[in-house]
Image (cartoon, rainbow, N blue to C red; front, side, top):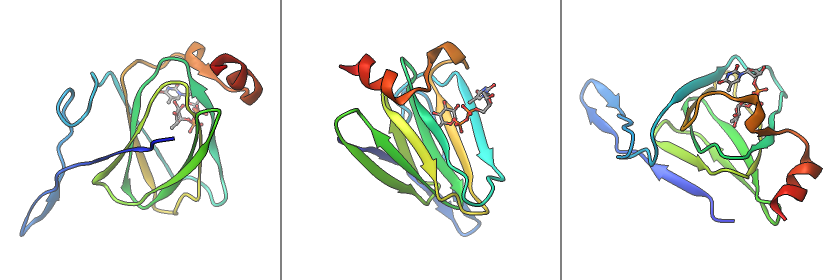
Amino acid sequence: MQIKIIDFKILGDERGSLISLEEHKNIPFEIKRVYYIYGTKNGVQRGFHAHKHLKQIAVCVNGSCKFLLDNGKTRESICLDKPSKGLLIEDMIWREMYDFSDDCILMVLADEFYDERDYIRDYDKFLKVIQ
Ligand code: T46
């Protein structure tokens, strides 16, 4: 599986750094929703689902965490550890998140509003749907 990483341009000067995210520019879709995950307790794993249609970009704006991505044929892990690194997660990819650092703030941009009906939370069902 090809993991799609987007390297965001850092607009830095002597005051520090700034990254700008714009739909259809460095974000390859319309941004309909932003959410962030923080205060994740030690040892916690999240995710364990795929989306039927949703496209998302995940960015660790602080700290780090890991993603395991699975397209039903291969599994790959990626560590998000800097605010300039975006992970594009296409539809029909099983994802699991783990190894959250104490200071991790994981921000996610999504191309659709929240809809529980878009989730596949059963791995066997996911495998059946992608066949
Ligand atoms: C994903 C990974 C990376 C809402 O009400 N609105 C929202 O926009 C979201 C994202 C969640 N929720 C509710 C649904 C659950 O009752 O918040 C609760 C926690 O969500 P969930 O258990 O799905 O969280 P994660 O961390 O397992 O997954 C989340 C996203 O849901 C998912 O789309 O790809 O982060």
